[in-house]
Image 1 (spheres, helix red, strand yellow):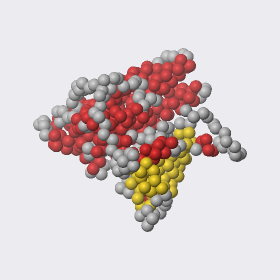
Image 2: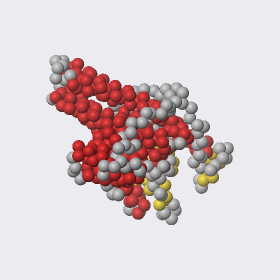
Image 3: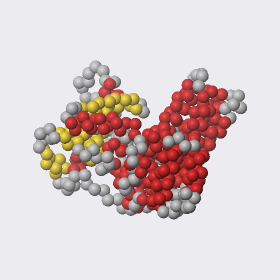
Image 4: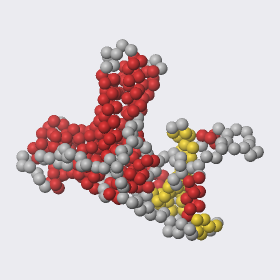
Length: 409
């Protein structure tokens, strides 16, 4: 047991066995000692391979998620700290690192404010400092959206699914911690009794964000840089602006490879697509989809994203990297069961429509899923239609005369 295991497959197997002991209730300190005896060092790819094997063997993603932070604490001392490669400024990985550095500064500001809570006689000053830090940290949503929707699909194309399942769930935990902190800050500002809980909530959110920064920089980014092609990084770069940047903008210097965008339909740009009800050119069809005040996404019969519209004001951002991706992997783990239920009911013919409506960032969003079938009733896929119906709900009376609401842009 004390001999160094220098074979990669053996190291992964040893990591997996030791993590299993941790899940079965072994003390973290005991597991750390065992790990240091049999695995002198490991790398990001081996840790990801270990988690992926656990999932393949039937360990629920939720269980790995719940122990994820403990995994990283146990493996930190044997994880090879590789100096990050030199990247062109503005490379997507460089931007992720610069954003993490800005997030670290915001976390430090939040911790400082929380640590001084007891000594600050002026509650207003405490709230102001914490709100400033919280506002900065809420920008992490752009960072996580880009990671989940623009990066994870490429890992999955390489057969690496563990990070997207576990990290997305951890991202959701951080979102929930920040939301809870925000509610407490708002309540305390209105004279509520939540002022005493702020330091604990702040430390919890800070710990979670710092832990994710470690996972990204020591595990995820090295894995990505060793796995993705330059063309894939170029596609990530091209799709990133729709999600925005977290606290900092990308530097200038990265030159992505020339992007090759496949046509969704095999129709010449100058030709016409013949349909039963008429004909339309590809240019016209693309412009029509862009003009619609709603978002469409089509998932084919194999549950893979086949198409989506790219209007200028999409409610939920989409990256072209999701094309061909299993739709279950486009949703956070907590909602996959609902997605599977809808697809199962549609495929079996039990249902043809599923509807939801939610308040979302000042919009009242109506989400509808339609079963798409051919004339014989064969299931072809599912169409998602998303629309902000707040303006429609506000309509009153009648408008029978021409009246423009706003001048054309």
